[in-house]
Length: 291
Image (cartoon, rainbow, N blue to C red; front, side, top):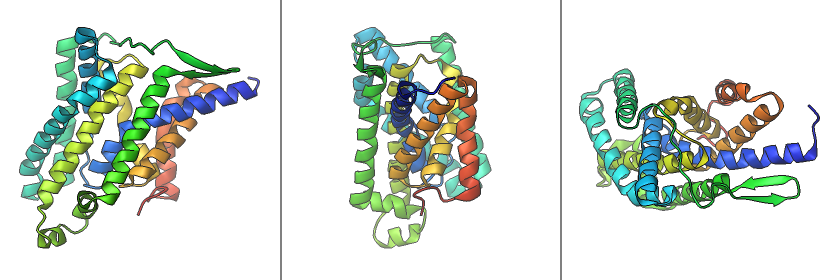
């Protein structure tokens, strides 16, 4: 294959736009896994659930998927709070190890998938928005709006979350809750409540990311499995517990996958996230911005 400037430029643009979406998909895991030490392997299931809710609102009411996801995000927040309460009562409060909790989240993953199959079937579903077929052209470089719009909203959400967690008392409490819960109690803060709200926030971001997903590509219930390795790879690469690092790691992964698909073929792309994960664990276990 001849390497030309338009080919490389389009790969860079597509990689950055895809990376912005990956940041939205992974930022919830950066909170639950990186800050709370909760291995929420079911995070992609909530993303797919968000995608199907966005699809339903679009099909029945004609609401833009991203707008619909923002409207129903409080429901995902409440869902996340409920899931964490069950997890805490069944596992954390009893001092059980991580393995039973991991099985709990695997159960949620597969139950969600089965319920979606029973309701929607196994066919791919997609949405049509006013910008789905639009694109910008700058010479031989193309900018697809179905990638631009999710990218803009994704980056805005991640940056806002980063600023909120960095510059508010609650954000500092979240950072401290996994390190020294006793100190938080001495300050009059309930660590369990902090963890519950933070976990709920991570699930709310997953619901919004689901709308980005269905804008970018068609979905079906089992597609969430493809994102399990990806979200943890992004978090480890960027640095556990770093929202800003998650954004940087996602952009790197998006570029790596796009260049791999462009020059070596799409079939090699799924191996990129696991390859980068292994390299990060081998040479910089704390990630690019890990503490």
